[in-house]
Length: 511
Image (cartoon, rainbow, N blue to C red):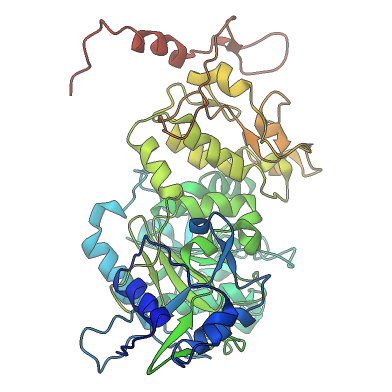
């Protein structure tokens, strides 16, 4: 490890030694740094100065938005005891797929129930899964565990196997038949071949495992998509490209990765690598088209463990850890407060309208091929949330907070919500319930605020407090027709309970 009497080098080593470092350091201008007689840090500052501003740099919030930052990881020198490095230099052509088995074993042994069905979804098995050992479809009930694939169909309009082909696909080694394998998208083929490599046998892929010739069966499978992903041991997630692009960089399975302009940056006898895909970058919506799709939103967030392909490298995202291919085993990636953290509040029984509002805000700006799928596409997450939102949801509106959520509005900056409309898809092919009422946010596309200041945890920096006062009684029925069959009163229990909470004479609840 280098030591020096250079002030800038000392700052760099201080940041590395204190990682994670909460302090910020002022290092002056590029000209000053590069004019120093110390040659150790010159390569770093020159590299930083020459980075393309539009893609590789990000605003540093620790500097009130006035600074720029890039993620650099120090490469570990295996020959230096106690070296501060956490990163390793990757093969420029091939992904190190061997890390996946270690990640999965570490997660199952260390995180235990924390990552094993964290949403407490009932045991669900798909109708069909791919048996990668016999290369055929087998009933899902025959497998103890399975993994799933979450991806974008993209340019291909028809990716599923023709109707009536299930009987053919059940024959041993049917998927090795060129007549069938040629119909599979590259990403599907690669995922099937990858499954045994990472120590698994069964995989579920929507385009292959749903029999679209049987409307009732396919509808049932699509309606429980959320539960299928929640029950998967692991979900392979493709942030890059779509079904036709496949997974580059899998040795013996796919072509080599595209050349990467990333390079090592010298720091005396040590070196840094540029981490282009830190966790927070992976979750930036504008960066990956995957985040724009409505169905993948639920698939991603209901999967307990995700193996993410992004930037031709691997990332592990579970409920407790973030692991990166370029980091050494045991090194945690940066994990900021995210969806899993927020959902844990709902899972603990707290009807946090702010958390629910963030979920709905993100989802409602996603794209759906059929707009009437807006409600089915989030039903899995709403069903989980209904455990603490008493009474469940009516077209996406929580009944216990009905008046508050009914007063939803466009998110502050958004003024162009668009009315969702039904497609020309036959009614027999539509997923139910598929309502698009104008009075609910589900009937409009765009970011919305469902009243996040009404019921949420107190925050020292949040000076907004909202109280909705009910002035009427609301009813729901099974049909919009005047007959009103199945009419029932909506129980807005939150507002009734809120008044009891204000009674300071009441004894505290047990516990």
